[in-house]
Length: 499
Image (cartoon, rainbow, N blue to C red; front, side, top):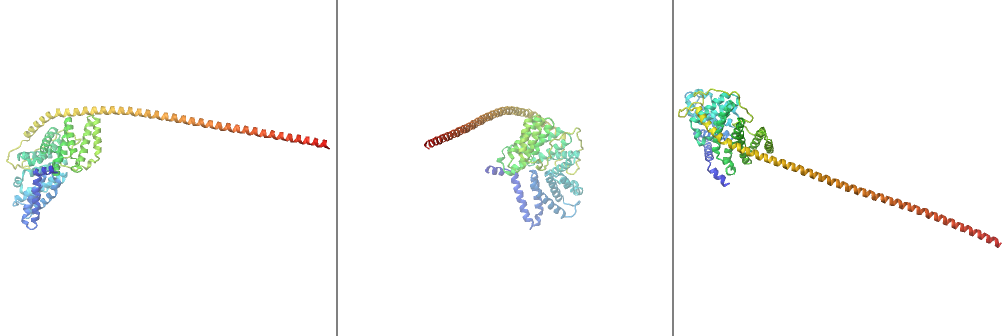
């Protein structure tokens, strides 16, 4: 907890947010009794919204952005209809607030609504023209160009989107906002936009070049801190993690499409590693993104014929148990599975007089060719440095996977052998038990047979004895009867003699 507080105390973005929020709350309290504070409140709301947009805090900026538009509209309308005498300051505040609202809408994935929001500025553009364009801050113009490009890209107008993206790159460069530490997310958004537009236009090399620049900016801002998320306050962690999934996923997808498979896989694995560290600290979103990244990895590995690893990644993705549809829309649309157009799209650059495209900095021109050439050199050097390392890492991983697969296969064979032996032993045991049971049944049956025989013999013997007894009794009766008759005969003779 103490470490998180120290991180928070060192977070200038969070400190600035607290200061601006406090200022807005204070002015809201004052404006009820002192209407003259309305201008200060409107300016404070615009400043707070801009600050939040620089940190990609789109959800937090939404309510204040709407209030800023409402209050800027009231101040603009309070001085009469829009016309040549309209205050450029009031118009600048109003246009800036509207652009901020469109940026919030784009950041939350509703580019069509952002396009309609920007279209509402057409009247004030027609009325005030060049004076207003030069009054706008460069970052306001860049956000407007970003929203226009995203809306065009979403509608399929690829050439228009690239023209707006080039204008945004030019405005960023000429205003030197790419060197401003507080504008790194804005510069990263411009590079990501240019990458997406080039990819849609069938120019993969340029797309990767811009995306590499965006990823470098992001990695510089993060500075490795996401590898120790427990040391960061929730606010810092949420801000640093917000672009992670889109930037790394797009880089991995596109590297693989152009044939840099090992680099793409290494990038994908880095994303997964970082998301694992974020899981459980920022709600459900990192867990859903992790499931998505694992599914992407499983698909990539399967296409490379690395079935064992693909199955493992797919199983882990399924274990996350979160439907992919729950990932909220972001400023960076998914590019998984996209292919490169065989016929690249061409486009005409925006005219300097185009809305939001006018130069407001020092007037120096920016050459897209030289800018691209410089970034392509950096990209080529990065590829040269990282390609061999990525190949080595993936080769080692493949070897480990092969060894592990061999180990699992050997374990499977051994398990099958042990199971077969166990089954044979169980069968032998069952057969022995059955044999013993059969012997016991046979013994019991034999004993029962012998018992029946014994009983039968006993009954026969008893019957014989009974017959002999009866025969003896009969003979005895016959003897006695014979004796009686003999005695009676003798007695009769005696009686006869005596007579």
